[in-house]
Image (tube, rainbow, N blue to C red; front, side, top):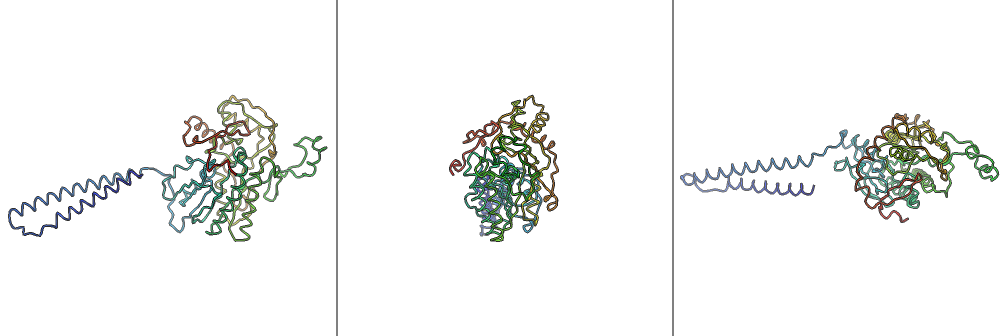
Length: 450
């Protein structure tokens, strides 16, 4: 780009110089032209003018070629909006898995999008197809520090979302979900923007109802865990949750709970427009290959014919939604007049053992399925009640889990065959995930410090 600008300036100077020569040649001879000598001089000068004009034409043609060469990058097609229709949208964590898909939809819809990301789990490659577009801006910034811009909407997605990522630096996870959320709410208060908080189904914790019985030692010894208590299942937005505040997952679970509280405090006290999405397990292309979550772990293990690792008996359940469905739900919620929390997820429920078998079958893998001890505070049941989303947003998932898995498996198959990019490996180090994989995390803004 710098070389193009330099060439452009030189060409402009050359054109200006030639124009001066042309003007001078044509009008700078005030003497009488009746003599033969003077007529010859005029003819010579006319030839010089013609020569300069040809050179000027050539320079203009070369400049045009340079300009065209600089604009040869093709961007995805976008909707044309006038400045009154076009929104200025800030997406924190927009270079991440979900955020980058949200960027694609909003850019194609003709809006101006600014992505703020510290690249702890986000990747430049997820949004590089928009870099250079006049309506797109990518800013490396950590939301725990204030960020100033004028905007109409804020999608606050910034936070590590997989257990190995948020457990790696729990203090930073808490700061991102508290201080980072406060900074975005403060920005919204100043600009009048509407804020959507990407919360999580983890605020429900392990959705049991007989907590006092669980505290009985005799009960705990005599009754198997899965039979001790009835579950709040599926989980509606009215369920207050059962989260262990000092467990290994608490930094994320409690961080999101306080983030929700902050949203509604700002709404009541300062009139900030807030929307809260409680997101259930989501999968799809652009998941990090070392994400550490069950979908990516199972797929990577199956594609590499490694043992597929299931924790506990494998009877714990999860509900998985494809990323395009989630993005549609986020946008529908942002554009709605509804300000209470809304579950966004797919009610199709799978046990972990059955899910592992599906992935093994789709990939054609020869992997065996092995069991390891259950992890602490792993929710035994997870299924969204999406009655509110259906009623208020007219939203429900469209992509089946199996169709989504096929697309995601092809994405990971391509990722495994592609050479590792320098961008992803620079300044990285390994962190053991709960499924035994190595998670590559970049040092950004000294993430290990609280």
